[in-house]
Image (cartoon, rainbow, N blue to C red):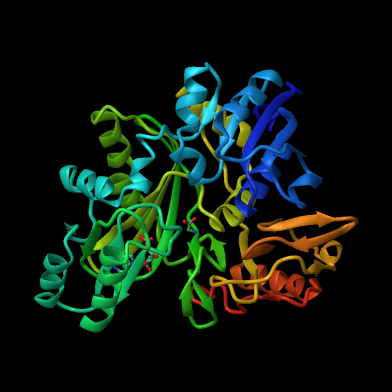
Length: 423
Ligand code: AMP
Ligand code: GLY
């Protein structure tokens, strides 16, 4: 289409982060005819094939801003919450640098569960009822008089590990002790929340104040093993689209949750720019909020961005400038399987050689890899996200599973049933 043709503008972009999410962001930017140079700080072995990796930590905000200024970066895109939490967006804005990501204050929608809960209560956004506690005895008395299962959340960033769904009083007691008495998490504050049931889905929207640019819906798989068994992880696989989320449910989620939250942030004087990630659950009463994140989801981004047919740079630029931007999405399905180090999400050993990457036909996003001489080695808990595309989710799954077979590494495990709720 003629209006899609954009001549080379030579835009330079800096992507902050080093995981699969950032690899997918780099990959989507690499497809934009408007972008001619991509840097990634610090990046990883896979990202290095598509971007120039810069050795700056994601929390070293001043060095990142110096780099952006010194290299005439047109736009910086933030991946990890750690960078947002130390105020990367605040610093960049103060220095007049374009950045896609919320201020530290706006990112509290992720970093403080209590902030998110209060906001939702004030603006009537559907979510589970809750109470906050700092005192162990009061919290224990409250759960003792309540029903099970009940949900106990540590209030603060805990990398997805600060949530316990307690089936009985013993499990609740252990969780409360860990969070309020052992102080293993830091400052002790917990939220005890109503248990919601239904299928979960991830709805990411680019947001610019009141303006909202919805992305395709995805579903993550949080448990480590097949059959949704084992410990909670950062996510072991994902797929998009999600067939049981109908257009009607999507519209409800947009009109009753995502748009009102963006407006609420403006009304509170803390407008949000960046990705607002709704971790939603489809209950009998309609979609409700489990949590918000202030950033792209990982591994959802790796299956959502490959389905974006319109220009990704233009979407980010429009959000930063508060301009309108229509997006176009492929009807094809995308499904990704995470290969993680044995032992993850607990302790694991790094440094194992990975072979067979070039035999994969689909996109393989690197989550935690490094180079050692001419070899690619494991360098994290989650190591690779192997993705497949297809006209149907079943086809995408078959393609992804076939590519997983191509990867040779003695210390990786993966799930075989990603997409089971939909296939
Ligand atoms: P969160 O870190 O808040 O996303 O929680 C991690 C996981 O815990 C979610 O993906 C859900 O599976 C589960 N969870 C959290 N809150 C609730 C809730 N209110 N009801 C049921 N499950 C929940
Ligand atoms: N996949 C969930 C997250 O990014 O937090």
